[in-house]
Image (cartoon, rainbow, N blue to C red; front, side, top):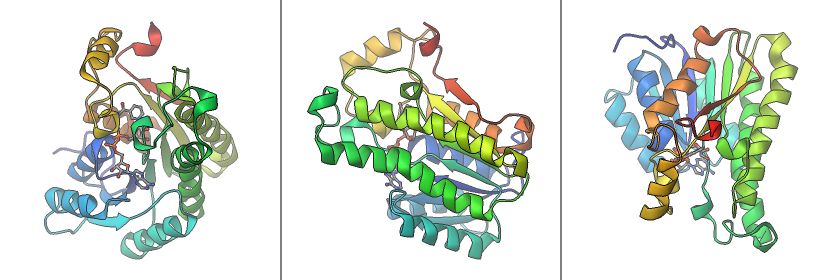
Length: 255
Ligand SMILES: NC(=O)c1ccc[n+]([C@@H]2O[C@H](COP(=O)([O-])OP(=O)(O)OC[C@H]3O[C@@H](n4cnc5c(N)ncnc54)[C@H](O)[C@@H]3O)[C@@H](O)[C@H]2O)c1
């Protein structure tokens, strides 16, 4: 593929890179000539994707990480730096949906504390832990993209811990963009709408049709439609963009 995304030669990290939006980002980045670290809690899936994308493994590294665990994140960064020597861009994309944790998808006060903490640990603290490790290594010209959601901009019923975490990601992104702008490092968030990935596997058929119909484009997003926005934000093509949260949602939040 021609490098229409402007990431050729860059060293990029994608967390949650083994599935869905992350996997689409890995494929685009690798096809555009970037060196990519696919990091995921599911090592087998990360390795499989790495083999599929770059069978000789020259420009790809698969790595196991639990983004909610500081030591695991530190080890991921150490492996990445040992292999590629630097980090030019990171897509902090790893996340879990409401279907992943029992009781998370209830009314706010009915969510169990354990479920609340798990959702926040992975979806918000995980982003912060990754940024902390990445920013120690990054130099001027580098960029970070954090995965928020349309749930990071407005709320929906029965989803308090997810909504709180994703709103937190937008706030964290803006605060960090202010802190690191003077160092020449850009930090943005993307806010996808409903996208066809395993994360929303728990959403039933009827509800899916209803949600799709509420989008001006009349359908769910495909993972690569979201990933393209993330890769653009990691490229020099977005050199004047920082501290922003981009909806990529088929028009859902415009209604
Ligand atoms: N699919 C949607 O409709 C949608 C909408 C808005 C935002 N998002 C966000 O996009 C991001 C990607 O989601 P997706 O839809 O591609 O989901 P997905 O389930 O297909 O992929 C998520 C990946 O993250 C990994 N992961 C989960 N917990 C992890 C952890 N603790 N450490 C490391 N990796 C971990 C999973 O193994 C998986 O490979 C998430 O942050 C999600 O909240 C998704």
